[in-house]
Length: 295
Image (cartoon, rainbow, N blue to C red):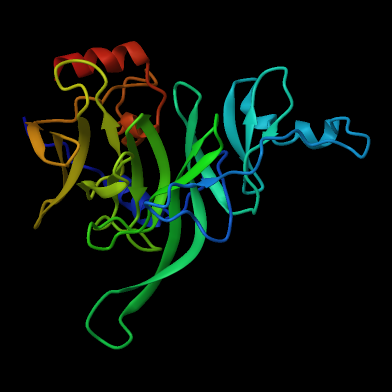
């Protein structure tokens, strides 16, 4: 079978996208983030917002968790993080107004998020003015039980991981994070990077791709599915598909994207359905797991 040709509509959408597409809730702060190896900083005490009499202020506590839909989760409200749980007042986790894109661990004990540290100047060429300022968002890990806060990732030009986007906490030792390259992403610099939590090392997992799907079932469990954009003169842009290990090394090449499905059941596979692993279309968990077991 031939590789799946990506349509001009997908390419246009990628070119038009911004590098900091803020998902629903996210956040954390402090002017200086904890440097790797520092042991982390302790986050602000988790406390309930109260009025002068020490009674929870209903209006204040209802707002941060309004988008949690009654689920136990961590949300961002006005660039600060709150822990939300059913029948409980919000607990404020961070202050400073610089934190966003939280991802809560399955065990509910840790959350990763991005902290806005301003901008970083990187060189594009050899000329005296060949510089560009990119977003400098740090990947932070917060232990919800101890309050320990640690920076685990930041821009790394050598690794090709720049303008970091929303992180995803895969397991106790793994975070994957979008890397948009520069402020105006192109098909050349969209990529996905992996943060190894124990060593706080960040490296490229897949380049010229929008996302990576952790494989959680089957013989390739612990690896990742990534799509790669290939250019062929006169033929446009093509997608090649592969399974990679934690270091980004290819362990298996796939002829087609195994996750393409007619997810909305209308009889047609549209552009937004060719990357369901990126969250564009809700996926039935059982079907995704079945695909993984066949890889």
